[in-house]
Image (cartoon, rainbow, N blue to C red; front, side, top):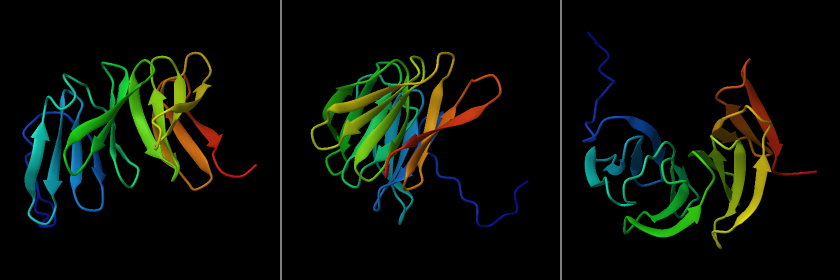
Length: 171
């Protein structure tokens, strides 16, 4: 039994919450099965929920560029750009096989494609893929974090476990 009074559970209406993000106003929850929801944290109420905003996706990650929500669709190998005010898809970008992890470096969205071991750098204004980085065979990029200079990529299955470091800023 949990006696921690600081812990609160908010039902989201679907199983398998895979990723969570705060956009400065709302909390977004991605379902690794097929949906997303938007929560008003001041009331803990769901203000938007959909299992069909992008067809029948499998969303395993979620990103925010300061303006738009980015949802990689693992099953359909695309990256969807969402307007958080209208909750609509405003762009769909082709991705690699197994689109999953996502991060923002202040200029670009970065996407990990787990099954083809690639990392894509995407221009948030034009929605163009400006770079694709091929990782070594046998790796599976899974998730990211940006430290202000480097993008750090977790490799889900590499034999002994490792992370990749990609220079984003500087020489």
